[in-house]
Image (cartoon, rainbow, N blue to C red; front, side, top):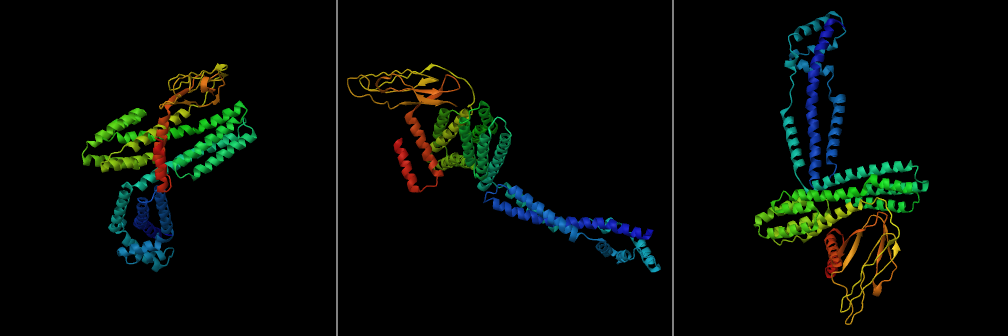
Length: 513
């Protein structure tokens, strides 16, 4: 290739870069318009249907569109030297370049004369003038319009989007839990403390748990699977003889942190609820009560709120009702979500009823506290030759009865009794406000103490490995019945049973109260 050929090739190459860039940008805009249009359609669908992986879908659409475009550009749209020469000739070169391109490497007089003529013309031409960068405004405006529509769609809040967001969180949570379980499965297989049979039992339960979590459609299902796994591991631990093996099971439970995951989830819901309520002037006191996790304060705040709401104007009630509906859309607990919606509807209608909200808040608060107490399961300690004393049993009537019990065992004795006693008139009757003792213990076993208990009194001992004292509460029996009945009535709406049967069940629990 002589010097003339090199000059012509250099000119074509220089012009080709600009022409190819123009072609690439022009078709890239078209490809982006197609990708964004498809993504917009998927986003519109996401307004009505929960699509938890919408962003991933849009990214895949974008990636596939770009890949297809690049492939088409390289093998179809990218202009070769002949097309570049023709494009440059169309700018006033009168086919000189395409002719000279075909004459490259030819050294006859006619060819050289033709190429020299081409050189004289291209020396006077600036490539930037004949090949300016340009974009079709129509394509640019279309791209901007579709991009704007997509952004607006993504910013529109809907119930389906909130559901998709919660599903995405659940999927992420499930993935993290499964990774933890797989890690413990690997450690269990390589453990030297466990026997082979015990390893197989543990690995079997871990595998079952992984399968159940993968199939779970809500966090409630995941929590059920985790609860089931915890119970299974506890049962395996009870059948183990080796201390090292038991410690291994405890380490698995500790590393999986099952109770803490559930506690933090319930506590997070309460914290989120309190944070949202704090933004509403009339509900700041309720927000503080929820943060305190004090049942009495929550009840007092709700009573005060009920009185305040009655004195509000209709437009203020409507505003608070709308705020509660918005909060409800972002709450994952189905019981609390339903209670918020019901409360919002009652405020809007003027027939203010906060009972469902109170039951839901107290129930969730108790679950959070009880789950937190359930984490304190580990510890050592022993007590021998303890004496168990039954509490005095006392009867109502004209007479008095006394019961005493003695016994030897591990732990401390607690009990209650009632009897006819020695009386002149009438029989002893159970007080309407009878108290029921509920021990809060992480480990231990119950057994009746044998002793001399007069007139039907009874006593109970609780054997524990954690020390002498047994923490617990003395709770009114009627209160337990009342709270359980309310919980069941509120929970009916989440169960797929006929309306007539729901009414029958409600009537039953109402009569219990």
